[in-house]
Image: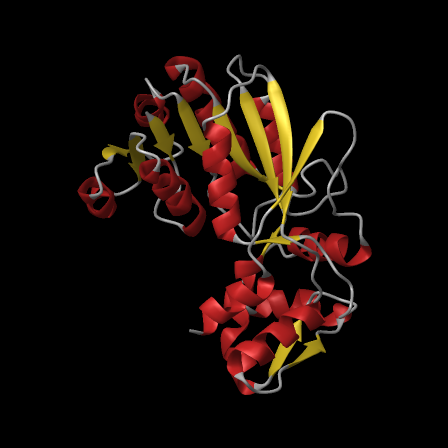
Length: 285
């Protein structure tokens, strides 16, 4: 039995469907029982648990050969990441109580970076997971290609405001389908202790590559327009953010190159097969 968090999202959904396609039993962990109906029809066992509810989470993990762990996204965290700290405590206690066979945690490229930025929350979760006795894999995924979902309307209008700069600077990106399939593969592997797996797409892409992909998908010219760096804080605050600095520094890290894969001895590196163009065509369809 494999217990899957985030199953109603893109990545978790692919993990679950990949396991089901292989004839393996899946336990869908949902926050709302109604959201489990679709998965129950596919033959999944349903467990209802919030990440902060330690007892419910432990029950959802208990008896599982493997757990796919995702933590809730928070793009506007309070200083010190208190939500992440609370989640870490809950997950640690749940795993210690349930003792699942293994854990595959969806982490991120740059989780090893100590420079303060938004991705430090994954670093905190990785640090907690290393204290557990069960085998753990940190799946460090690149920039999601599906982040371009937010650019579809602008692409249709012909100009996309870009925070990725310079426009020709390429960064590692990955499709959610590749993340889900890789996570499903890892859940079926065996190991002891901790391991790190880095995952990116078939090649690296720039903001200009995103524009070219949208141009091809839409059959019309699309261009990128850099958003001036000195306007970011005011812009994010106008959109309702209270603590924009971690997000700003994350984007700085990609743009300046200090957010990238760690590499080095003992770290595995895998490559997906889905191209950015394929993802963009699906987004506009």
